[in-house]
Length: 251
Image (cartoon, rainbow, N blue to C red; front, side):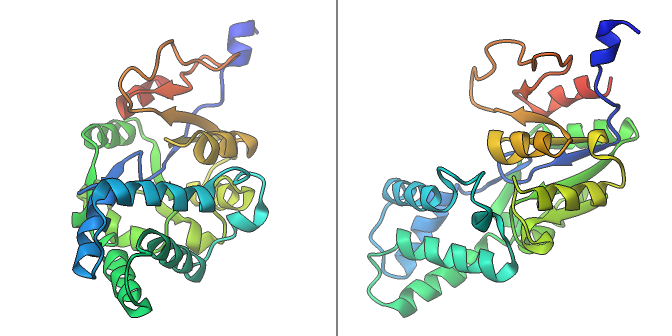
């Protein structure tokens, strides 16, 4: 057997797509939606201010140590809801009463559970068609809560996926091993036959590789992929600018 052949990864049988940042994005953007809802409940913050506060809150939840702190990876519907209530409270500390903050949270929580609050990236539809034409299964795999089922149901292209794996329902967030074990089970094949696709280098790529899956990162920023993006010893690209580039993994 040649050295090149020995380096070939196992054939892909299932493609696992992360949701936010990979196949969908908030529309309008998160900070704009937050500022708009916040104003209705008495906040004076504009989208720029909201964005700064959101970044600080996200860093507290998911920042340094997120991949090594097991407690941060435990998930449930109650945990996810409490986390988002805390984030809303941190962002809108200018609201005068707890009741106002509660009402603001409820409106935002409902907003992001609607398909109309999200848009698919332009490369998603064609990529889904090509994956299915290649005879591969598709699974959505996301650090989200059960609202994602309703969001995905808003697009016909997602109604044919094999499964929607959500952290709050399996009990673990990415990059936790528990999440990827549940994902592999949902894919119905061996871990090495699953390609995890996502925009987060820790949650999606490092977490998947550590659990024996194959993985590729999507980086949509302009000029992000300066070289061929190949992993050492692997013939497939480790970073792609568009989901269309996934075809290299099964051609």
